[in-house]
Image (tube, rainbow, N blue to C red; front, side):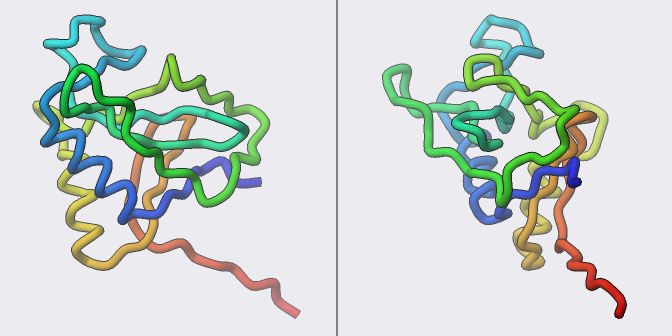
Length: 137
């Protein structure tokens, strides 16, 4: 069973770019509820049986939520329970002291990496290529 979520990196890169460049950002469950203090992030949640990532930004207060990037496969680990859309977890794109997630996404996208990986237990993210293992005969 896989405990990781795999997303198409070009779609995630578009959502990350949107979150950083938008006019405003909405809060997620782990942040303050004041919209002025919300930071650009990717929102991770479960919707209709699948895991999704989306930008937390908008172009005006009346725009609907931007489109969502689905996981390549549904989550198979039974111990992981993702929140619904209203209580989405945030993956901050900008940090004060740590490496920037937006820089990791942009570098991977430029290098041609096709996959964005999230560990939903620790909210650790990565970029790369997925290995396919063959059974030995």
